[in-house]
Length: 102
Image: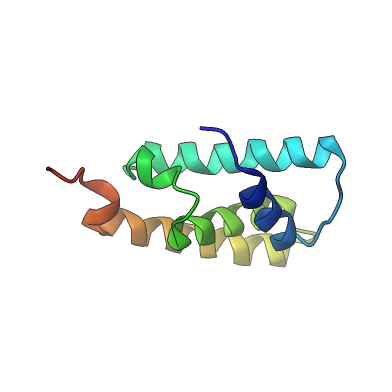
């Protein structure tokens, strides 16, 4: 799924960049997609992982991207642990792992 402009802007703010350079936008978009793929591979529904209005998914994506953009090892470790905690929490919730039946 494509990354929306406003969603990308939220992630740019999360990593403290206002750059409009296409390289930064492309790298951030790739990281968002990588995070979404990781969530799906771990059992989160793709509809949830790609939902740009879900605050839990946004939090996980922010932590993932901050982990990858970290300036030092301590910051990277903290954000990695935050991401792992958030994704595990989603994996424990039925709303994120079980398709609703009509």
